[in-house]
Image (cartoon, rainbow, N blue to C red; front, side):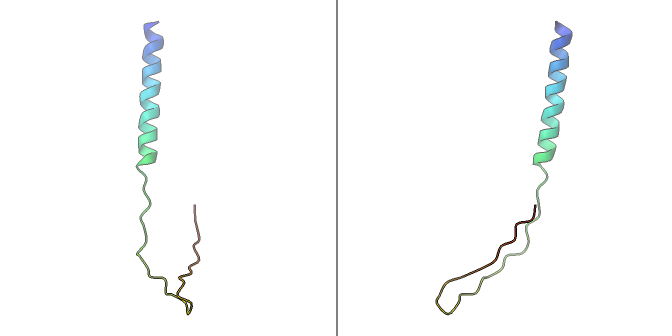
Length: 51
């Protein structure tokens, strides 16, 4: 029974380390930009989401 608990704890610790390593992968943001206003005073921009 003690061995089962040890295996469970080791598995949990490994899973936690993998989750933390994946969460730490942060994308670098690009430089900010200004969207010009149109003749009617409304700003319109096309946004492309890339995963």
